[in-house]
Length: 83
Image (cartoon, rainbow, N blue to C red; front, side):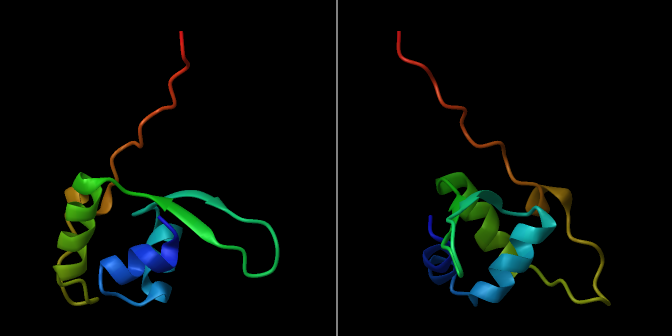
């Protein structure tokens, strides 16, 4: 996913998504070179569901800490080599 597209899919501002990437809540695949290079993230259907639940969770400074199952992304698939 391009970060801007993932943010749109989750109905959130891209700045919040970048904070999540920085916190390690979203897998960053790579950032394209150059000034304002595009940011590419990884998320499958299961990850989209987790991110939507994270988006809906209350997480103000006065709320209890977010549960690990919402803030811990699953490992992306590893590339396989052809036989």
